[in-house]
Length: 420
Image 1 (cartoon, rainbow, N blue to C red):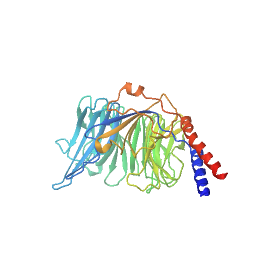
Image 2: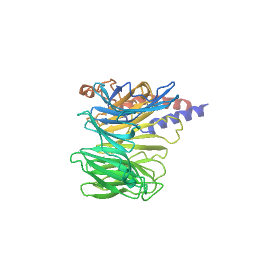
Image 3: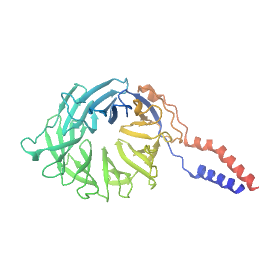
Image 4: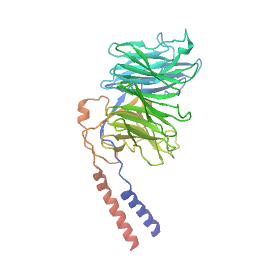
């Protein structure tokens, strides 16, 4: 019995002393509600799902997909925009309707009150300022089927809209197109032998993944519009996918070591580094990049549950710090990242199923590392400057160690007693 107790005490001490304290982000959490942000509507005959969330300044845009399961079956799709500050919600497109006959495709892109999306190979643009919608592409196959493209993945950056056009005949390779909204000039930016996966753009730079060199994998490439030059970013073995670019940095999901990890590339120094956890039991996927922050989903490789106990990891580029976001809560799903704002939902309490998402504003003034306990946050439906400034300081890492000292002392006393 004494030996068992001794082993337990030593194990507790090892955990307290050796296990590093993982940090949570410091910032303000805002609970946002809309009756249209729902994951599922249970009961016959409808199934409803929301997806494609994007942040744009004070607005959120997303798609709600609804399927009537009982005969006669029908499908509908709606794109909405909602103001974070007052909850004002508006429908910007719906299908089926007189303007749209097919389901909307994600991902979406939004900037300065404008939202772009694709529908059955047509790219659409909605401008909240004018309240008008317009189609930017059209079916060119009536005269020559070789001109037909399946257009997808539109990105809006400044006055440019960039998208992927997949050839159908005579080959299946992909191309990248650019439309200048000011001049209305459209140009073919890139045409290559590979199939393009995802696309990202910022300013004069476009990044994407394609499989020209690895039919079973993929590599990351960049096109500089100012120099009219294509640059390979990463051609490592196996699959590289889901690239994102912001300023002089590019991130992507990388399988060179067999399991997904996140890599960061500096366009100025032309260097790359792995920024996700190097623990072989930790998987990292779907990175987002905005300014100084990289965010991605992270979970344990041995987690076989349906939801997975995933969390969100945040990497600060300027300091090289990696932190876990709201560690210890129920599973989190990362929806978008813009500047220092994280849009996400979690499956405890008021979740996406109930029509709730969360907007977390990272505190950029304080870089204090905190304990594994969730950061004290303010939950409300409206985001104001007063909310951001009223955050209470979180306990420091040293406070967590101090709290553990009494337990450590008790363990040591118990150990001495049984040894004596």
